[in-house]
Amino acid sequence: MKKNLTRIGFVVLLLGTLFLITSVLRVKSEHGVNQKAGLYLQPRDSIDVAMMGTSHIHCGVNTGLLWENYGIAAYDYSGAEQPLWMTYYYLKELYKYQNPQVIVLDMYAPAAFKEDYQYDFIAENIYGMRFSLNKMQMLAVSVEPAKLHQYFPSFAVYHSRYDDLEKEDFETFPWDYEDMEAFKGYTPYWKREPQQRTEISEDGNDGLTPKSEKYLKKIIDLTKKKGSDLVLIVAPYMITPEEQRTYNRITEIAAENGLIFINYNEYFGEIGLDAETDFNDGSHLNYWGSCKFTEYLGAFLDSYDTVPDRRGQEGYESWDKNVEIIKQELQTHEDATSEK
Image: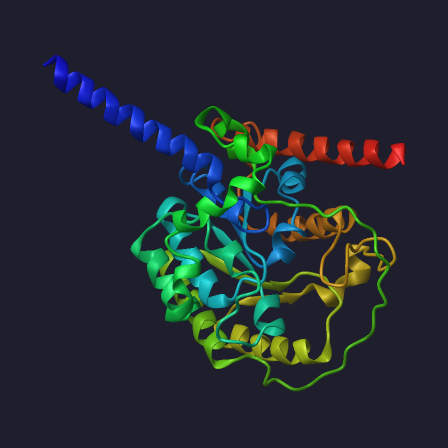
């Protein structure tokens, strides 16, 4: 009996040590990886609005502001340059744990990126998702077989991170889960870079690739099956004529399926965006631009009867904390700026 207890204790200690080591070494990033990992820490069926798509979502939709002003329990479940075929499997993963009333999907990726395999930021869209058949299916359509070993299994990548560890790598233990739960995906940018905005006039509608169109229709079918309202959007950025050709085709698909599609590039004035002050770069809103856009988007979402005001409800305390975390980030930025 004593030997058996010793063996059991050794196994428990070994597993615990491996878990802690993995917590430290696993890849972390607030441009896709943390958004995926954070999903699993959210209270089950607590997310009413899931924001999906590329970095235009997690840099442009301020979840704290949606909560503070409208009581909307939203989560930015997005990844940098995420193609629609990965979004489809993200959506399937989301439905395992949540039952959102509304899915807001940004359509920038199919307009800007045309390759069937998009590797530049693919790691942001792989790491953080739990191992499952769903993840394997996502990898099968996202990574060519000869390159699969570069991304799977995830722990094969960890061993090379010993020299790259930073403070945040030691902030993902079980006793840190309360702070991790309060992260709702929003990752603000703080730079102000003036942009030159041009008016786009483009009637062509041939910009959507066959693979993107296939998976957009699969996303539409899945949200209908699950009973979520799907809203297609384009978050504000410096659009090109070629990208507008894609949006023209998406407009047709949305109309064919009775969906709302809002290109917010057409609403700069109503949103109150200033190209001189509200952008981090040509593709992303900065913090101040994201607040303007989020306020405008929030007013639209608030019109949905199925999206309740959760403020004050038990189980939603992490959204209150999300507000405080974002305010702390703003204060930290302002303090750092004042010292220069």
